[in-house]
Image (cartoon, rainbow, N blue to C red):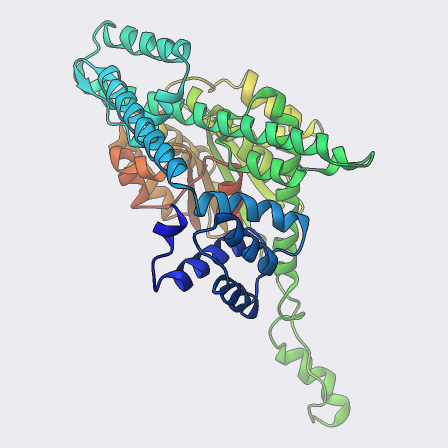
Length: 448
């Protein structure tokens, strides 16, 4: 706005306070007395003179070159001349019109058998931002699915899920690449021979931690694995500290106390306690390794593998259409890489259809010794399975035999109402959204 429009009589103080608050948000240190000084300076100049107005504020509010940079930028934005404001408004209106046109086009293209897919505004916007080549590939996939043999309209929710997952992947990928580009620029501008090694590393970890696990590229896996190791090590330390807290000895041993105090004529001068029993928590990991779940399950295995020092009784099973015991590989000398190789490449269950009920039944029949009041079961699955009613019945039986069941669901929480299986399972267990490394850490911290 122009100064004449922005500062009508009686509103000078309000606009100055709003402007100084914007400067404070950018890190400028501006006290109340300095704001009063700025207001008094403005009362001694011609408010219609833009240069005089800016100089008065600059003299009272700016203290360094860094402050000057933010001041100039915010001043030009907040006190824009009328012609700049008009151009900005026209540009914003043009962008809005283009955006609405793209959204309408996206709605018309994202259809299955003539019915629009249920995509939210964020997903439609992501589709609109994709290149024409990427959009064409997605359209070709939808067309081939639509014209497939025995594909009926009720298949639409399945297609919606696949499309939503792909759009989430594209969004996470673009965000991560943008963050990486920013970090590289920061590294290039940092001074000193060692600046490149440390600059931006924290923000890179933050970007990787917030990225959808399924969208993490092969080239980024070493960084992701290092992040998982650090987080699991931190959680292991927390568990060990919690186990060491509390009384050092067990309950009072009355018989030993009486026998030891016989030398004092029966007077009790010292008490004896029974040895403290340390409860050893048992964790049983159930990983869905169907094609859509492979990456998520692999990361959870990697994370929990780092807790072996704090949780000694640790078992691992994978399942899709049947159950496979991975515990021997977990405890073998080959270690983590061998276990991950088993899950990714040589697992007999990987890539098959999911039959959760049959896998849970097999677990209870073949491994009852692992199921008791000390066992915490962690399930990694999106709940998509055949025979959901049978699966819920078996899950209800399993729930009564163990301490707790924690369910890590990689589906975004806003999609849960779209799946009957999610609602059926969530009513029996503790279900948490878990499609990023940060969510994985947040869920397991304090619950193991």
